[in-house]
Amino acid sequence: MFNKKTTATVDYSKGHVAYLKAVKKHKLMVKLCQVGFLILFILLWEIAATNKWIDAFFTSKPSSIVRLIVNLSRDGSIFKHTAISVFEALMGFAIGTVLGTFLAILLWWSDFFAKVFDPYLVVLNALPKIALGPIIIIWAGAGMSGIIVTALTISLVVTILSTYSGFKEVDEEKIKMLKTFGASKLQILQKVIFPASIPTMINTMKINIGMTWVGVIVGEFLVSKAGLGYLIVYGGQVFRLDIVMAGVIILAIATALMYQLIVFLENRFLKWRQ
Image (cartoon, rainbow, N blue to C red; front, side, top):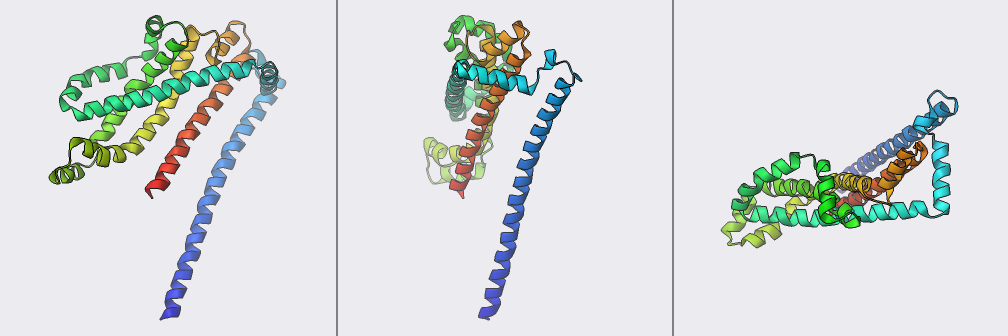
């Protein structure tokens, strides 16, 4: 009897170990393919530009971009532009996330206000917010404050609508059970609504990373004298596609790092829940 149980446990453990190995192998293959496709694209781009299969004046080429980034790193200008844009993006993202979540809580708290402001939020969400950029710059100032407000405006409505929608989708039976035990609205928010909506809020934060960077770049296109947006615009004005591509590549890296930070927080949260 004892030996049969032991054998069953050992067999289960071997199967579980094999499953974990298969999962790790799959993840490794995905990462290798991602890196491989990127390297292949860069090599084909370099070969095509070098052999004049494509016009390097319009597309630049990886080697030129790398040389430019190295040169800009030596005088520190690339770090200055990147730091300014990253700071603006982080400020817009943080303020938008906190303020949007707070306003979503207010809408959940008062069904009356939610019904009043719902059509306005829908219209604002559908409105091309980039068109409001010049107006926002005039109101908030032609400087870093205006750029941050532009980024905040673009991400705020999305945060409110997504978070509020997550609040409304929480299981009603759990809310009714707490009400049966005499829980207040604040206790329901703390014990059920907010914890159950954290995955939704994390997904909203992932979306807002891109939205925030759109606001930052639009603001820098309009008024900035420094930043990645300014670098991209300057490169286009002087017909230096290597400057434009360098700015775009650094922008992509900064966005990816911010996204990975949210993914890290999400994984930590999932482990905590388990």
